[in-house]
Length: 346
Ligand code: GLV
Ligand code: MG
Image 1 (tube, rainbow, N blue to C red):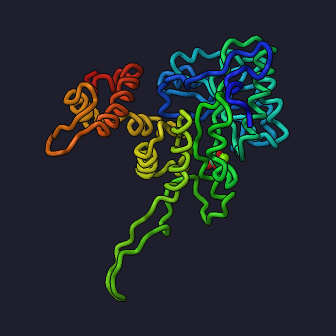
Image 2: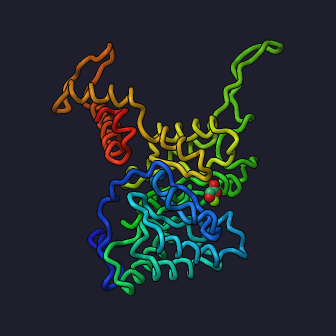
Image 3: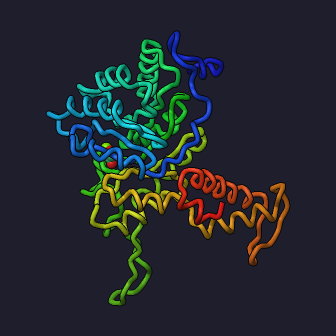
């Protein structure tokens, strides 16, 4: 195991010092763009004003024959777009693919100074993070980058879920993690054909006697994995995200899946379709009524200790901390998004 005193040392001579705290940024949605399609790149100047993060996707959904064009398209969009307040990420191909090495080497050489985060798919264990960590440090030194490029892991294999805590603690370069429900379902042998969301047959049947109508309660297939991911991330100071929701014809189910993840601790989700941008904004910005109530708790307990009653509900040091999570997030979003600044009255 690495000595603790070496954990924050640069991994290559001349590489920038690792980040100690994940930068505080609003990242309610990571919006996926296929960079090889010129028509999509042309929409970027408008898109960047409405999203928190733009991600150029090089991995799944990009046909094998278009992989090189996607990489070049990403370099082109990174060079020629003013991203303003939006973050710039890319999802590279998996480390065991024929494209990953050149994805990393070419992109860091060309636009490493503009790139915030590399999303790494199919992370199986801490060894994957150690590999990219070392390689990025060498490239950062070679190209004289002044700030480290962060890495965001996709949790989408059975082995990755088994090792989630070790992955989360593998490097100070980690930004966070996203659930990848499609690959994870396949890797685990789940019997679904959906990209995230529920399944009508994953239910609990209420008690009742034969012949009477029994209530069926659909359960959340992803609850267990999100719970493990959130604990691993928060324990290590990383940011957890729900990933993709593939049924664009069902915005209600998308909203509900995003909201479950938000309530469980996630800070954002992927948007694969323009309609999901607004859903993510609505869900991952705390509810204005909840923010107003949380502010009353903070106001009632200025030093964060003791016990008070508000509207018949007991408040103490622990609810003060809960309220602070919500108000801190609301303040962050208010500083980034005028609409929510007004809604929160902040
Ligand atoms: C995302 O990459 C997924 O597999 O769900
Ligand atoms: Mg995947």
